Length: 116
Image (tube, rainbow, N blue to C red; front, side, top):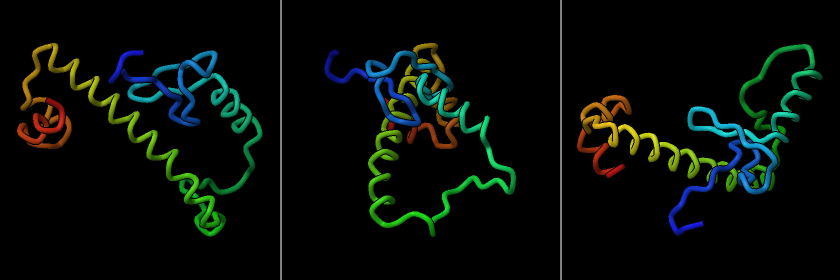
């Protein structure tokens, strides 16, 4: 692997493509075969009752919360790398910094400073 190359990782468990059997790519996200299997099991055995989309903060102790932060940060870096690739492709296709900035909700200058 060359210096500066992007290593694709599962957006859920953060394992690299080299550490899994299959890594499926989506729009800026990836999921490995193990996480697909786990997701299928969760869906199959989902409990009845109200749906909750955010963590139950009261049920997470301080150490667990802190242990989760590096995983979130690693995924943030993966998303940033993916965004750079997508912006790079937009520029390779000749799209202006105005269009790129508009798509990202920022000014042309801000897009150029962040991605050039």
